[in-house]
Image (tube, rainbow, N blue to C red; front, side):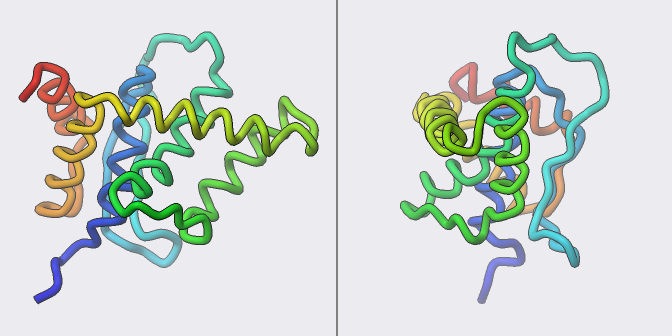
Length: 155
C-alpha cells in the first residue's frame, strides 16, 4: 500500500519551513497536498519578523532548503524536480550578481544551507515536520514552530 503523501515532497517542504524558522521568517502553513501547480507548498507569514542583515540571501537560502533537505533524505539532487525553486533563486541572484558570478554564488548558498541542515537539531526538526506532513498532509505554521522548538530542545 502506498503512503497517502509523498515522503520526498514532505522532506522538501519541511526543509523550506525549517530553514525559514532558523532565519526568523514566520511560517504560515506547510502542505504536501498537490495541486495543478506544485506538489507541495510552504507559505510564509506576513507577521513581523526580525529584519535580516541580508534579506535577499535569506530568501535564497530558504528557496534552496527544499532541494537540500530532499537530497539529504534521498541522497540525490533532483534539479529538474526543483525547477521552480531554482528559477526563483536565479532571479534573486541576478538582482545582485552578474550571470557569470551567479552559479558560484548559488553554490555557496547551497553549501550554507547544507551546513545548516547538517546540525543535528535542525535535521531533527526537518524529520519531525516531514513526519507530521506525511500523517496529516498540511500543518499550520504554529505546529511547524512547535516541532522546530521541540527539536531544538532535544525532543
